[in-house]
Length: 247
Ligand code: SF4
Image (tube, rainbow, N blue to C red; front, side, top):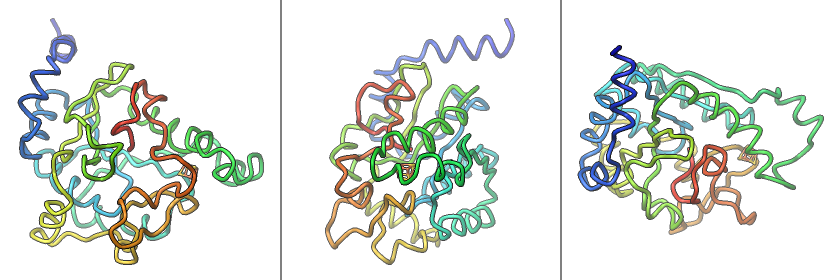
């Protein structure tokens, strides 16, 4: 049996309930080590280079310095986000792999107009979900920085989830509180996104991100007033519930 076949059989045999029982309250580094031992090299880590993205990326590169960092550039990101990406590449030596929508931004605007206002799900499908589908092609699993205390929709996020497509999604910092994230960033002298201090606690596209008032849910500044909380990966990547589905 080849190494690839052995790896495939090992992945198929994963007992998700046992893994989640074991890792539910585990330290993120232990979860990342398990992920790398189980899935690498068919493993990536997604990052939007958002408010606190430095935390997960810093943890991941301690275990696997060359981990592919899957970055979806929708064409509608803040300039500060791209500058923050470059800053973290320099600081952490990240191996960023960028994916863009198949329709260039100018063409999208000419053909679809301000689609994020009229049909944000369709806009995300073209500009976020489809590129993410391409990003994870050929992978068995990817790690994401979502956390249980970010919003009520993410409160039940398991450490490891198997999507309908068979792909595993791992959330190594799901069990960390906002306070633990801040402590990790402070203790390791890691930067926040430049807009964080202006009240942007969760940062995506310019059209769909607002600053959050004091005490607000970190995700409430995303698609504010549109009844939308996630970008739609849950359905497009075969996830059944709208819990913990975001990039
Ligand atoms: S976050 Fe907004 S602008 Fe970005 S892809 Fe989704 S709907 Fe479009």
